[in-house]
Length: 341
Image (cartoon, rainbow, N blue to C red; front, side):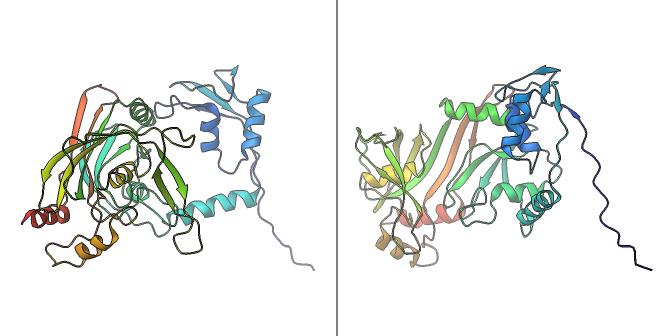
């Protein structure tokens, strides 16, 4: 008698689903919502469903760019994906979380709509580009009950200070709109080599982003340079500088950016001949080595750039908020020793 070989039970046939759009998803385009929620379904198939009228909002046909409102009823047609694709998506999700340690960061402000933390230097804001995980992944692991946590903006890995995280999609959209409309004020503290001229207050040279060539370990890394005003690749960039304190060998600056270009502060300051101390991409490398090898109390082993103050309108109340993160101990201690003649 032949043994009976049992196969895997067949998956239940997919059914039409009706999704009630909540406040966190309000304002999203239909296509983006479906791409986010139908993991493993090819984008081409999603757009085909929308064009054919299988996807509907409040029983009416829609376009891919239709914006969803809270309370809308979204009809999602039956969607079947192969078992292999489903297993791969699940494996990738587990793999992405494997090894990510839960970590809480110093909280500067929090309510039901947003979270403002004080990011330490040396921690990326998110995974990617050779980094397995960053602040946002660690926050999600530390707060498994949170339904939504997304970065509103970015900070360089080497930069410490204020980082804004949205706890609702509606807050994310509102805050990002404020950043785009330049309704926010982001001010950093930076220490540079030399005596910054008090009259030099506005830096507006265009910036161009490129990748390093060559065959060494830095090949492919992102870099930024100042370009001529008529350069077609130049991005308009505006940085405002105020001298907070002149030191015997450097200057402590308050730097406010009105545009959010990659490495903007670092490149603008260095282009004027005043690189940020400890900057390993655009700085004075010989000086950096000297500062890093100084006595334990006066050594500088990181870049002296700190996101110090952030002003923005609360996404719900509209109240103007000002968040301040004082210099971390390692920079405050270095600043004190560097100020001594």
